Length: 485
Image 1: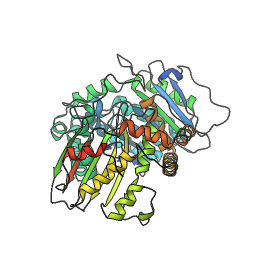
Image 2 (image 1 turned 90 degrees about the vertical axis):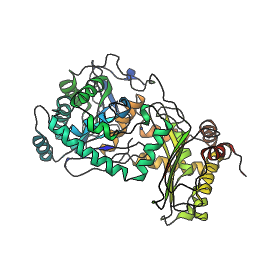
Image 3 (image 1 turned 135 degrees about the horizontal axis):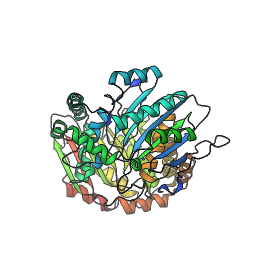
Image 4 (image 1 turned 180 degrees about the vertical axis):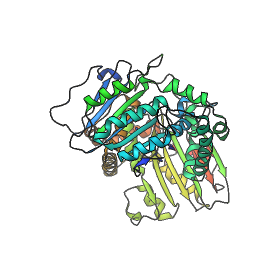
C-alpha cells in the first residue's frame, strides 16, 4: 500500500490476492447526477460514463463494456494526508494498511482466502488528496467484490495487536522510501513549497506519529472523512450501472454524510500558499546531485491544466542511457546531451484540487557544472514565454495524447481515471474530449501559460547529495526573468 506523490501515474497489477502497490498517483458538482437509477443503454457506447447519486450523497460512476469478462470496482475517497494535521499526520496511510487485517465478520485469513478463491486482486493506496480501495475480478464476482469493499470500509476491526504490528511495517516502508532519492527530493519540495501547510506534509507522516497513532485516531479519521458524500463507487469493464447502483444502495445506503456535505470539484475553503524557498541537504558521500525546481502549477480543473502538460512535454525528459539522445525533439535534451551536463532530467506537472507544482527534476554527476545545468533548464523555461515553435508544440501534443490515451489500457486504469476525475473536478472528461482539448492548444496558448505561471515567478528548490556547486537561491531565482539570446 503506497504513499507517494502524484507526479507520475503508474499502476502495476499484481498476482491474485491481497497486495500492496506503489502508485504515484497521485488527475461539476453533482448537478449531473440523479438519485434515481439510470436506465441501462440499449447499446454499449465506448467511454460513456454514467453517474448516479444516492440520497445520502454517495455517488456511483461506471464505464461499462458488456463484452468484457473482467471488471474493476473501487471506492475513491476524497480524503488523504491533506485531511490531517500535524498531530495525526500519517493516519490516512496507517488506516489503509489496516484495511486488509480483518473486519468484524471476516478474519484476515478469511478475507485473503475469499479473494484468492475469486482469483481477484484487492488493493489500496493513499495519496495527498485521495484514499482508494479497489478490486479487480471476473464480472460475475462484482457483487462479492462490492460487498467486501463495503465490509473493509465500514467494519474494519482495527485490533490493537494489528495496529502495533503495522507500526513496524510502516516504519520499514518509511526506511525504504528514504532510500529512494527521488521520493526524498519530492517530499522536501512539497515541504518547502507549501511549508506549514497540509500539502507540505508527507503521506507516511513523521516517525514519532507512526509510533504514537492510536486506535481512536483512526476511528476519528474514519468518522470525519469516510462519509457518503466524499465517496465514489467506480466500476469499469464488465459491470452494469443499474446493478452497481443497487449494490451501492444495499451496502453503502446507510452511510452518513458530512455535517457540511462535500461537493466534488468545488473550491476548498482556503487554497494553500506557494512559498518561494529552498531546502538543501548536502551529503558529499553521494556521487550525484539531485535537484528539483518548481513554480506554482495549476489545479486539476484549471483552464490551463492541459496547456501545462503540453509545456511540460516541450521541456521533455532525458536520460543519457537513451540510445537516440542526440535526436530528441526536446531542445533542453539536446543542450544537456551535447554539453554532457547531466545523467538525466524529468519535467513534471503535478496537480492538486486547488494548486500544483510545475517543474523539473535533475540528476547529475558533473558536480562542477551544476550551475550550467540549472541555467540552461531555466533558460528553456523562460523561452516558453516568448518563443515557441509550432513544430515542438505539435510534437508535445502528440506525445501527451499518446501518453494520456494509452494509459487507459485496462479496467483498472479506466476506473482510476473516472474516480480521480470525479472526486477532484466533479465530472469525467472522456478520452475524446481530452484529445480535442489537447489538439486545440496553440503555441500562443503555451506562451500565455508560461508568461502567467513561469516568467519571473518565485521558485521552490529541493536539493540532495553533492550540491556544493549550486548557486545560491537568489542567483537561481534571477534566471527566471533574464532575457537570453
